[in-house]
Length: 54
Image (cartoon, rainbow, N blue to C red):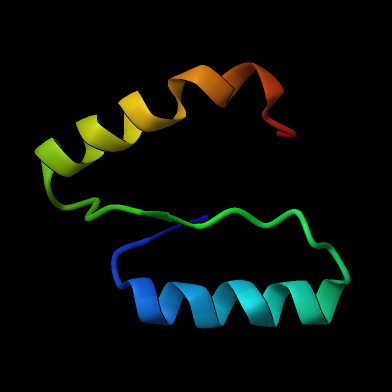
């Protein structure tokens, strides 16, 4: 899950995990309105993309 605000993102992550029982919810921080931030996010997830459960 990608959120811009770390505090709100963590609250949403905890809510999703509690509601669904799924403890495998990752939180990544990025501002999708910023190309620089999106590029940084892409570099961060590149190593894990093959393990993505899409």
